[in-house]
Image 1 (cartoon, rainbow, N blue to C red):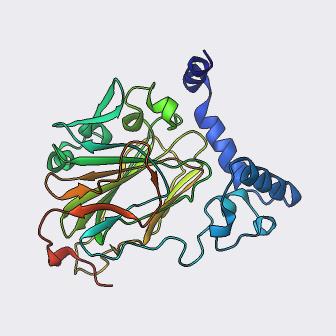
Image 2 (cartoon, rainbow, N blue to C red):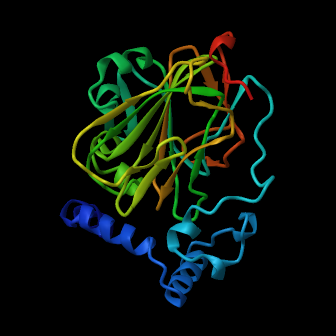
Length: 298
């Protein structure tokens, strides 16, 4: 009964207004009130502040500054083997596995299409048919910066406007097409084993999605799809990121979806639905022969 009420509230609540209000409040310097909120949040969610670069809760001037706190050096070692991809975020695996033609599994009884996830771009979707996907859910207690699984050169970024449903497991199990209907930022990379997509999915009270190369992508929320393209590897202005390097962040938490082409990688055998993830640990192994022409220089 309670779960049913929670789901109905997802449809009834003014999610955009709540998100704007949360974003406004999280960016305000409110002195003792900010400190009170930060301490209450850290206590309630059992945030592991010993991992933070700055563990002093009273020193954060805004809630957002606390929420996107960097980790101390060495807190997340990056898997060193060149053929092994690193997990992009702290969180938990919501789902992972094969893309069945263009169908991605969301939860029991719910699939969504690859093309819908990629904003109707069938040319972008085509190489990933029958490939692999992984969905990582970031809970409020988690570290909320997102990193590169492997070396990559940014090809394009697409902002897709959409709903702002919560992306927790309960909502994923009950709201059809959740990840294909929520606001998201699609990042397409060329890598040594072929194209890879990393998608940052928005949610209720996610006040902002940012990338390291573009800064704040949302807000503003203009209600239109926006697309940016970038120079190829070796060209002036190319954006090259190395494995483990930060690529984006959420100001209030959400979900990361990774897409891989058929035969390019194999997921680490220990990963299953519900597996707790720590950024930098083993994510997958490359199955294709490396192509050095798209490998960034470190």
